[in-house]
Amino acid sequence: MTDHHPTTQTTPKDFLFATLGGLFAPGVAIFMIVMLFLGIQGRMGEADAAPAAEKEIQARIQPFGSFVAVDPNAPKVELTGEQVYGQVCANCHGSGALGSPKFESAADWGPRLAQGYETLLGHALSGIRSMPARGGEPDLTDLEVARGMVYMANSAGAQFEAAVGKDKVPTVAELTRGREVYATDCAYCHDTGLTGAQKLDDAKAWSVLLKKSREVLYGNAIQGTLGGPAKGGNAKLSDEDTRLAVDYMIEQARVAMPGVKAAEAQVGG
Ligand code: HEC
Ligand code: HEC
Image 1 (cartoon, rainbow, N blue to C red):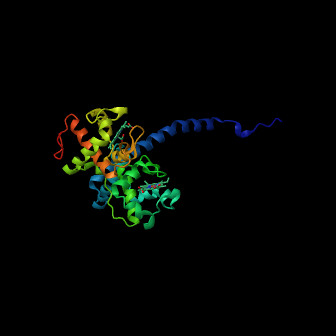
Image 2 (tube, rainbow, N blue to C red):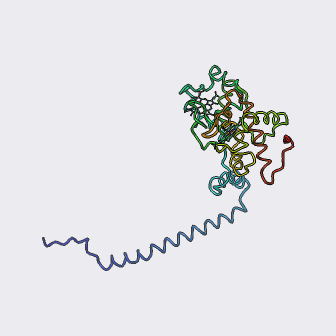
Image 3 (cartoon, rainbow, N blue to C red):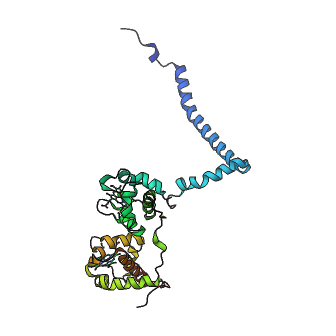
């Protein structure tokens, strides 16, 4: 075998082209980048003179674009009831899995609706029996859970409106009743701090608790937490009375916080 393969040999001409190409390619790239930059600048300049229609489109897409891409700290847009239902609750409530009340079934929901909005929401937030807290989706906000709950309840004949009671201002009558309940069923732990119960004048502990919504605190008081017994250990206490005791506790705790003035409805003593 004396034949050499002809194409493996680099002629001076090949070499020259290859070298020029190698030098030239970055030049082309730089040229293109510069052109791109000029193009963008040009278009930015044009925006001022853009026809009204184009401006309108820009205005329409702008808030959406800035929410998604620019500000990761912008408040999240909360899901609608239908979305919450579809993404989370339908997994069980669509078919009645695990004995859950089925979507659109007035028979399933009837007796449950009779418990009232607050109780249902408390159960949806804190869970009850095989119903997991927040439908097993801890990232849902209170309002989203409320919306999902209302979407289902209304499908079965209720006429609820989704709301969470952050801004509730208890009436004097409610706080008076709450104070009575508190005195008989809650004070011996929450006045003393027994077993780690948050004392009402413990601003630090309550600043943590008050980050939760009223409904979550209601739910936890009614259902109990790891350390706190359900309804303060008094099974005979109604859900409503437990909620009023929580309202009273929230009110007292808020008053004990530095810089917080007593609400008008505050009960003396
Ligand atoms: C893993 C299954 C499952 C998912 C997911 C689920 N639920 Fe439930 N849910 C149940 C079951 C089971 C019950 C019945 C519990 C019982 O009464 O024993 C129930 C009951 C309820 C009740 C009635 C509680 C009462 O007091 O009678 C509400 C309200 C409720 N769910 C809301 C929701 C909402 C809102 C979602 C979605 C965010 C959701 N659920 C997702 C299983 C589920
Ligand atoms: C036997 C003692 C005891 C009694 C009685 C008691 N609690 Fe508690 N409670 C606790 C303890 C302990 C905690 C703290 C639990 C924890 O950190 O998980 C707590 C926590 C709470 C919380 C905060 C729940 C949360 O979200 O972390 C609320 C609200 C509450 N109790 C309400 C009540 C109400 C209302 C009553 C009376 C009806 C009551 N408690 C009676 C011991 C008690």
